[in-house]
Every structure is written in C-alpha cells, then in structure tokens.
Amino acid sequence: MSILVVGSVAYDTVETPFGRAEKVLGGSASFFSVAASFFVPVQLVGVVGSDFGEKELAAFRGRNVDLEGLERAEGRTFHWQGKYSYDLNSRDTIRTDLNVFERFEPKIPAAYRAADHVFLGNIDPVLQRGVLDQVQKPRLVACDTMNFWIEGKLDELKKTLARVDVLLINDSEARQLSGEWNIVKAARVIRSMGPRTLVVKKGEHGVLMFSDHGSFAAPAFPLEEVFDPTGAGDTFAGGFVGYLAGARDHGDDTLRRAVVMGSTLASFCVEAFSLDRLLKLTRPEIDERFRRFKQLTHFESL
Ligand code: AMP
Image (cartoon, rainbow, N blue to C red; front, side, top):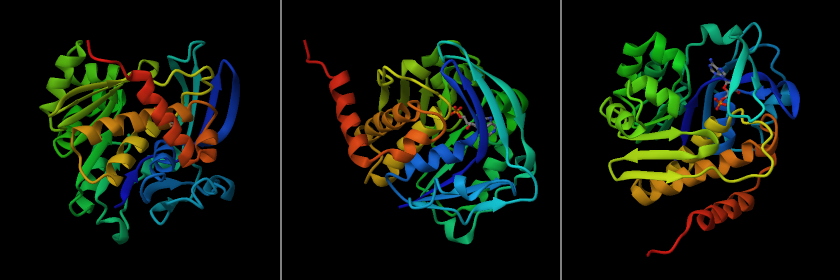
C-alpha cells in the first residue's frame, strides 16, 4: 500500500490574530504527506527552489515520506502569504509568488507508478490529468481543487473530474462548481461529473460526505485553542486518504471512519503554526482523539 501525492511544497507567511509566522514550511503536499504518513508510505511529487533548506526537509525525514519525486529547480520556492480575520473563518491571500511552481510539470518516478492511491493536490487540472496518464491503475484517485480553476479552467477541470473517485472541496467551491446553492443538490450535480464520493469541508462546522451509501456528517473537533487554520484541508485529506489506503476495503464503515480520521488529523494541525503540531504528533494521541470523536457524536436511539 502506498499513496502518491502531487501538490505544492511551499514557504508560507501567515498572520493570525494570535501571531505571525514568517517563511515557514507549508504547501498542500507537505501537510498531506505528513498526515498520511501515519498510515502508509507516501511518495511526494513536487518542486522546491534552491533556497529550500535541510531544515525544512527534516520535516519529512524519519517518517514514511519518499522524496525521490521532489524536484529541486533553479530559483526560489513557491511562497504564499495569508492573513486571517479575527474569527479565523475567512482569510485574505496577501501574495502568491509562484516562483519555481510556475513551470512545474509533475514527473512521476518509475518507482511511484504502481501507487494504489493517488492524491491530486490543488494544481492546474491539466497537470492533474498528466499525473493520471503516468500512473498504472490506482485503486483510488482523490482530488482537491479551488475557485481559481473552477472559474478559469472549468472544461479542463471537468475532464479531470471524470477520472476521479473522491473530490474534497469546501462548501463555497461546491456551490460554484455545481451552480447550485443547496449543498445536497450541489452534491448530486458534482457526483454526476465523475467523483462517486464527494467530501464537502465546512471549516469549523465540520464535514459532509456524499457517496453511493448515502450521506454522513462529522463535526470539527471542539478545541479551546485554534491557532492557525492553514493546511487544515490538506491535513484532512491526508488523514482521510491515508486511512483508506491502510484499510482493507472502501465500504461505508471505512469511508465514515476515514472522515473522522481526517477530522482528527486536521484538529491537530490547527493547534500551531505550519506543521509544528503534526511533526510532534504520535499515533497514541491520534487514536485517543479519534475515540473522543466517537463520544462527541454518540447518542442513543429514541
Ligand atoms: P489550505 O489551508 O488547506 O487551503 O492550504 C493552505 C496551503 O496551500 C498553504 O500551505 C499554501 O502554501 C498552499 N497554497 C496556497 N495557494 C496555493 C496555490 N495557488 N497553489 C498551490 N498551493 C497553494
């Protein structure tokens, strides 16, 4: 079992009401890989610049993340800067310096092509399809996208979605992609585009999953301290796909546990800047919070 992930590896500068972090490790593939590596080996495909240091690479070393597919290009690493509102529910992108990411064309090493699970991070849908053309026959393809591609490359995105099993997006993206305000109607439209399973992320309000088995809802774990939401979505995806890759089947019970596992990992991510909390996390801590999720949502029948 292994997961191939393609996405950004970045320097992030983040401002929240509680502080500021300057040029810290970020990027969708970084959060995803570290979260998923608690479950199965991860193969990371991305690009960094010549300024990307050993200190950042240390985040991946000593865990199950293979870096053969992490290309080092001449130039600077992708840099994203964001600022959160007081309630942490909305953020403004202050700047996006694509740098080496601008010319990124994922090249999948031969050793990765048999990956049985693939996660297509939020990149150009044409490049996402290029990845699928290079892999053999994955059991499951999961995918993320964003408003930029829904607005700018809808036809290309639809061609990619036709080859995707699980789409993970937030509620506003689901509305925009489907043209439906109601999330249940939006889910029907999006599932007819290809992904049999749709996971709609609603930040502090949790997650809704729509699949062939029906729908399932999970809250976000109620935390007293939320420090920095950056990467929560990618960390959710890492926990979700990681759990599925390690499981024997992809039936309804497994999908539901995967949603709760994604929510569990994401709840740790937001407790600190960057990947700081994830890098200190242990499997017993994950299992303990997963159990607390069960208590949180359990109730008796009438
Ligand atoms: P999330 O909070 O889950 O939406 O993910 C935040 C991460 O996405 C940050 O670490 C950024 O480095 C990365 N990111 C922001 N904008 C982009 C973009 N246009 N393409 C790829 N990654 C991005």
